[in-house]
Image (cartoon, rainbow, N blue to C red; front, side, top):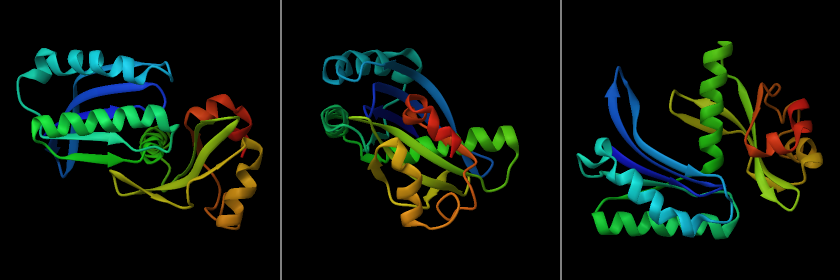
Length: 198
């Protein structure tokens, strides 16, 4: 299955991947990709990035089967540029468009990386992404099989200093009732190192 992925929840990332069944799971092969880090140039950069990603020889040899777009949470202006672009590509190419929570995707990647490095069973990840205005979007997650995640709390937005308290209000107990946090991931964790101490 040939999939175009568009994420404008922070900077802008575009990729064309081939998802092929492999040993009971899906193996993803990245055929082309492009990204830029500027959080305020989504609309200006998406067209050129799409053109480069879709015209790369590996990506252009077969038509798309689907488009996947990040749905946030994220600042609305950048997110809207990605969602509208995904909708236009899906409509013009006659393929379905699917939304994926940005914060869930960060959790899944962190769980994959942590699990492969540490060998730990059923780790819990705290994801914190930049919400601007000195706040983060945050939630706790646990793996749900090899490809999905389960949110242990609702996604909240708050200052980093309030994260522990707000998560505990939703699921009382250490680590929000999760038995502790094994890894902290996301752009908010880079901006606010104190979150890594939770």
